Length: 392
Ligand code: PMP
Image (cartoon, rainbow, N blue to C red):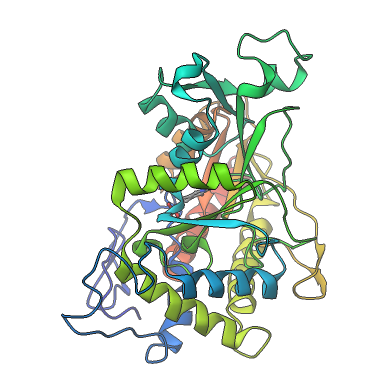
């Protein structure tokens, strides 16, 4: 059960455990509710309570906007997980990593009086916020310039933007298809979004060490509601510009949130490699979901999923089974050119590949939601695959 939950349309009752008949299951959003049972097991130890007078200032005790202790705890987490080299980087906090997308574009763009425009690009299928957030500000010192297909093959000097003015967004592992990725545009400033570079979702071959990296608590601990993300930035000037953007837009992330984050991260750190390791928990849950979904879809000739091999992981010190955050579904039949519509007719809400600048033959299924959501999803997919057998 989920006491105090906010039920979605498929569930009702005080613990959202009673199914509503015949509903359309929502596998659209990347809401990381799969980690809720972990925090229920640690309810008291992870609670944060403080009085009305506490932490009222714009600034933390050191007169800055970012808690130094929280920075230290995050660096310790990266070191312990081995997923990023953080010690030699500057850290910028924000209201979710989603706020950092524009902060970093601003930081990496030419000065406004230089008269140049930076091109912002990403490789398909990419995370759509890179585009949707950039087009809000198109026409400033940067503009959204589509996917990398033309830029990756361009020989230097023949593009109108000029090679130094390209900002490439890279998601690794990728949302939606879970593949580990590297920048493809030579000479571009890469922003590498490692939202899913944690042992819940992927093997960790080595610590990431790019010049500009993005992380979010949403996909580590599951606290999407706290709206907390951070950037690791090698260059001090770039970090200062990103920090200026954050100060101008929000005067820094919520101090309440920073307090909660410290508690949450310290609890995760204290339990690493033990019985209550959050990554062991997360990997077990996500792997089981992927295994079940794969078993059903592998019986189908109408649908297919991305293939992810088992890989050696430096965190678990062994070869681990795949456990992606999303299934990237392809509809194989000629007539099923709109795959998300095929799913919707079977009462499953997914996110069309069109959003990722990919073909409508693809659609994304989120596996991050609750176990009840997943069980219902699996039933719907099973019905769809079984119907195919009966028709054949
Ligand atoms: N980057 C990627 C690749 C994501 O999938 C998400 C969330 N879906 C975000 C960034 C934003 O995360 P948040 O704003 O919750 O930190």
